[in-house]
Length: 194
Length: 99
Image 1 (tube, rainbow over the protein chains, first blue to last red):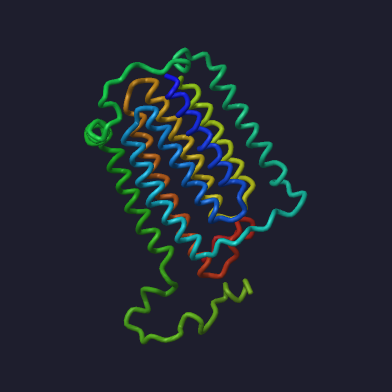
Image 2 (cartoon, helix red, strand yellow; image 1 turned 60 degrees about the vertical axis):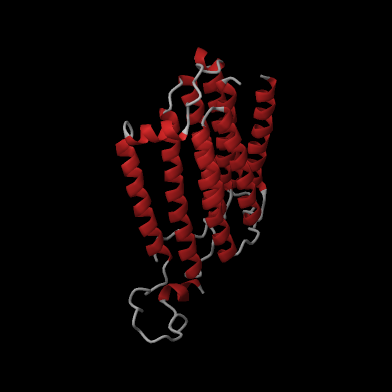
């Protein structure tokens, strides 16, 4: 059992350090890299909890695909160091206090809940627990409706992202002669910002 | 390892994410901190699934991953649109929902 505990503490420290790095580092690019570390450590924790498929999905989907999207956007927008909030702001002082209050409350809820099962490792499960076969069977039988709803949600999100990120007047420009139309006349919004 | 260890770790990660959402100004980093909070929820779901010996919690964790992916796609789309319109990339400055 000592091997499991050593692995838990290594992964837990990695996850906590990654999370702290996301919040504390000033450059958004380093924050994204720190989140990748956090996600990999979390996948190790999922493996310790017999969730093989979730761990694999975490590494492939999260640490692979989603983080690549983040890095593209950080490179596009420009990962500049953000300025600190002005001194004496209400949010700046109140935020950490509020977060600490949530933390104390959650810890009290876990430790003082009195659930005996929290202090156990859970029942012994077979080798197939959390395998892709078992999860897939659940998704297509018992959780079919949430599965379909999630697929529609993904479709809506993909269409929404295309609509949000396309160029202004993008659809009307099809067939128009190419020219410097983008910079020709600033819209009233741009005038107001300048 | 007992399940309570995983739950306490997930509470810590959630708190770190919440403090990041409250204190950071760059919307990209706010989205990253939201990811932290969702992942903390995922860890708690998988830990409870292990405690009950049932795989339903793992299916919930998968659905949470789908929700997180949707949120990231829409959030990054909004940030790219802000950048195209030359708006400041700062959550404090963004107070109007006009395109």
